[in-house]
Image 1 (cartoon, rainbow, N blue to C red):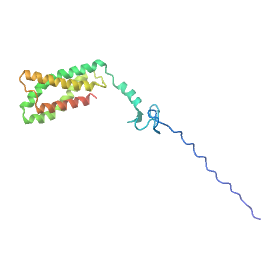
Image 2 (image 1 turned 120 degrees about the vertical axis):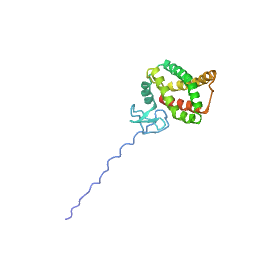
Image 3 (image 1 turned 60 degrees about the vertical axis):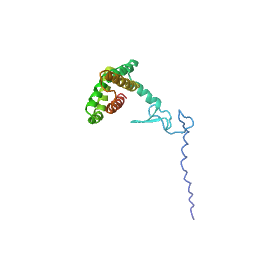
Image 4 (image 1 turned 180 degrees about the horizontal axis):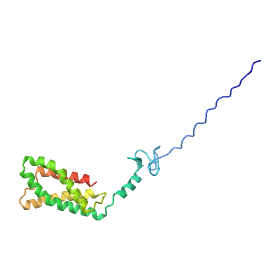
Length: 183
């Protein structure tokens, strides 16, 4: 007698359901799998901002930055005024010093320009109580430019030559340094 064994076919587990398509909250035609790690909103790569803790949407980034920038509107005017006054007083002195030193004035301007900008940024920061502003650097930059122009007029009044190449380099480097520090 032969015994017949019947084997039951092995059934494979059912396939997981296909995930619903998710589209970017800001670009409804763009499919995405990425979500903001703070608010869990679906975002595409155009909307995502890579932070140290992962991708976030631009709205969450703005929310964090709003707490970071605590300046009052008057701080912008104070930064502008301080930059104008300090630069207007320093520009004729720097121009005279850089002209007297001749060729070494250019080297001196390259070496000291960044330090002068850093010092100006710290003076501005102390004048506004160390608060941070979103547009503070632009007001300071405008004040530096206007202060240099006033400084050149003051220098001409006292017989100091108005503009020379070392003073131009010095001013550019000082403005760049102040701009970067006040960001």
